[in-house]
Image 1 (tube, rainbow, N blue to C red):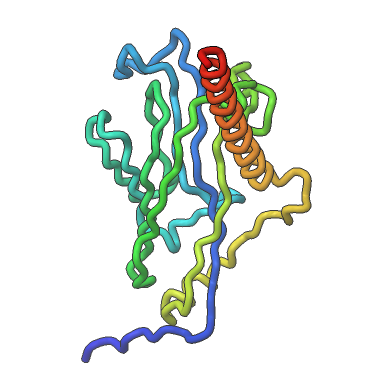
Image 2 (tube, one colour; image 1 turned 30 degrees about the vertical axis):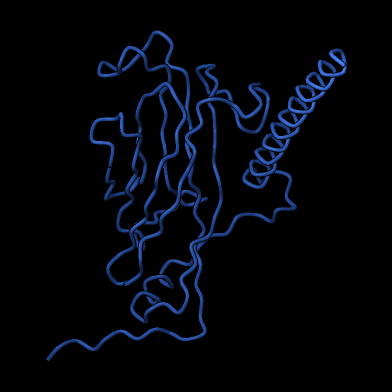
Length: 215
């Protein structure tokens, strides 16, 4: 006899917090033996629990798709920690796919992360940087999100309930680096937009002045 089909639990949602992103540092004169000569940074991209808990009870694997210039640029990580360390010289968008365990019977989660090798404001004095014990500047680009399972299957629900998720502190907490990270990046984007508009206005004014001189 075939096993009974697991039914979905109606009107119920279960969420699990995750953090994703990357850290990076300059390699200096000490480079891995296999690092191309033009590579300047060592970086690690990851998907983790905010508290460092094991998330493999509901995540089966994570696939990181790197820039096509990397050999074997689609990397599959099938066991925790769900992270990948590489070297490089430039920033690019990494496609991240999270696959859930078979009991979930859910589609993979697909999103992008911009690999950061430099601080947002080009200054090593913000929440996007830290100094490690060796005195090296570590660049951080880390974001918080929640994976939401709407109407999960009964079997998967039991697995999720076996290890209740941990939540981050409220956004009102000053030490919540994830909300501060988002705020800092948004301020950076706004400033870049303002600078670009100011440049366009100046260029347009210069053209107007040139035409006035010829009249």
